[in-house]
Image (cartoon, rainbow over all chains, first blue to last red; front, top):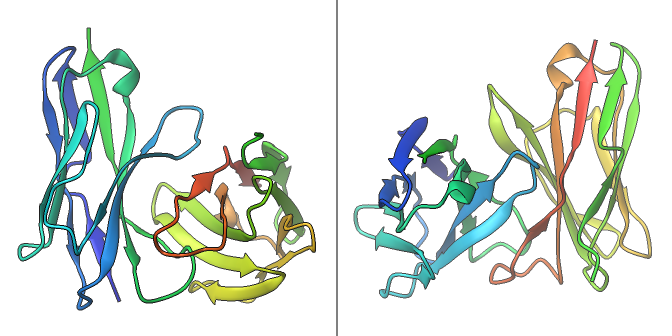
Length: 116
Length: 114
């Protein structure tokens, strides 16, 4: 079974600064997808960024980028130019590429606080 | 296009009762999956339905069940509620549940069991 670990329960960043959230995972599969989701107080999970394991190039979405290290099974999220609206819970998630369906394995989450 | 809609937003029940939660996926989406979110256990996969058939199931007792209707709307049912069932229940939908598809979540139903 796959496991996802987020070792930072809470992180804090100054507005306009850069912050990196950590995520490690364990799997015996070679094909999979990794995600970062944001959950604001509204509770709705919002996809921030997605990485396909077969792609060596790190995914980027505007101010959000990842550092995907497949051999180390590490998948960190970097948020540049942090904004007050970035404050939320962030979850790292894993999905197998082999099984049909939407079964995601989530990490425990990191609460990000943004200071004005 | 309307997003994933979950009803009700909040629910209070007592131990031993049963509860039914509803999820309407985005129009055209045929895959609906359910997740339980608690402070202690985090986010855990409950089950997934596609074309009215359960396709995947997480490690939850038989008290947790679900179904999907021909219009892709889904319901989940929890019978004989326990205090530990208090949680945020999230529903997510996608076109067909393919591993490369984007998953869209609703805002959840907050269930409190007293």
